[in-house]
Image (cartoon, rainbow, N blue to C red):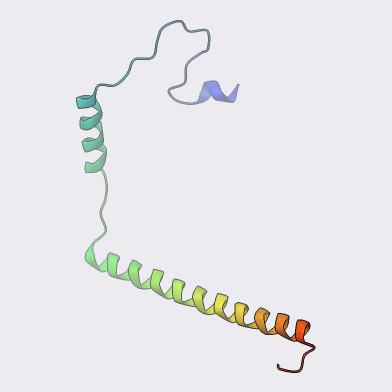
Length: 84
């Protein structure tokens, strides 16, 4: 029932074949959609880059710390805890 509400869907009882879009029409539609894209300014791009890099560095530090801690814990468990 929900599938019939999807845009572009058709009934299974329909005997008419689906019409394919021609290559030039498809190209025009792609170009028209790309004209709607809002590209970020250089200031926004630099800001997004810095935010992403800070996030990646923080996640690397967190995962590295957890890896080191779990590695030492596993080493302590399997070697008897002498070399912590």
